[in-house]
Length: 370
Image (cartoon, rainbow, N blue to C red):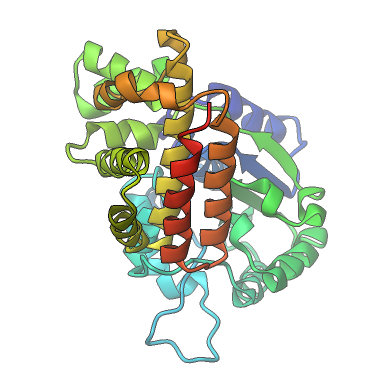
């Protein structure tokens, strides 16, 4: 994994390199930022750069992401084949993880869940993981240099794991560098946040996205420009826009269906809609709700008639042309609150059928507000 595999993010690359060159590298870093910005790509490129001692053997191991001093921690699930006493750890899914990252450093939690075979579960980092990490990092570096521990989505640690990791960060093994890749830092223990150096990773600039689309995907300048603008700094969304019949199209259909049925007050059909949505896995349910929030914002902004404020596909805009007026100053905040509560409830394992049926019924009332 090399720096040139990271799309854009020149400022973040230079800052990470400068920490080393000025001998100011902390033992724990946390890369924070929106999904699709390339935080994991940055973490892997930086980790490989730290471990690259210039020898052919080291570089061969790093190209295969199999360096013995490069350790990965990530959320896992409990498979039916595991015993009741077993606390899942990253090593249980090492093969699946390696296959995923070798496909590229840009991926989603949903892709990882599919790789593990647990799309209807919620992945966490268990206490068993922290015990495993202590054991691994207590060993001497095999190459005589750094030991790098990349922790993907540390906000998914359970409390026991977080407390154990805190002790490890407070008294880190010699020449160990922790690199956390975080999307929701507020969910981490304050004591952990206070002991790491946070680096905020911005959205990818449009020009870097455009160039990457042209070079990596071979599309035209015009198509690359449109997709880069729609992606709004998110490489994963840019890739999604390239896919015919993508998940976003399904989400748009669900959004349109909800709004039409709520406007027409078709209670029985709304119940059927909620049952279909509830059949999605938990992670997909949360992604749909995030998409709903995005569409609520875009429809609200559409009312201002300013093209530069909108980031919608042609199909999304076609629907907004007649519907946007129903998302206004009188209900936009209440609609946003409703979706955020649903995201919270789904995250807390509430009954999805109840959550989405209630969500649909409340939309009937909210669409009448002006």
